[in-house]
Length: 217
Image: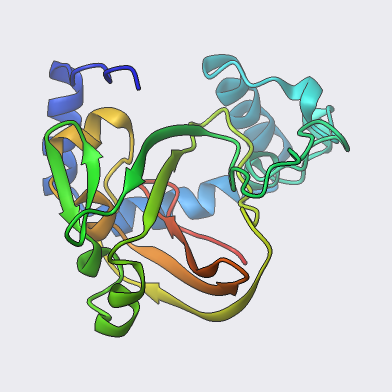
């Protein structure tokens, strides 16, 4: 796996600022802004983000940005049928993002970034029973950038057994921040979904981030 880019001065400053600012208040403001249905506002937001992050709108089921009722509708847009063919492999990626880390869970710890680990128990909200199920398991971390398709799918067929929300911080989850904030994924608020599968237990964990602090299942 290629080495991630080292955090720059701007990354360090923005992370330090997020330690001081009211993260949830900022997220609440963004929640309202991105759900505005004012045509001039939502169209500008969509156009700005599409241009800045080079979003390929041609992949979307709805390619006319003016047709989206809000920025959030665009952000969670559906893709055209067949745009992401499902591989024939047993296990597939649950999200249209970049795999930043993957591997074995060693001694109850996961790799967050080069030189940084965090505890499985902390990620699973200190649930001892669930932690024991995955102590010798495998994990993968998938990072969704602003340009990516923001829907999460099942990586393997299974039955949902439990799902709960864990409150926490709302730091960015970029590669740079993962190198700057210890235990980032176990600190941010998240939704933990446990499934039973033919291969054994599986957890799909949706981690929130600054300005992306709401999830719909």
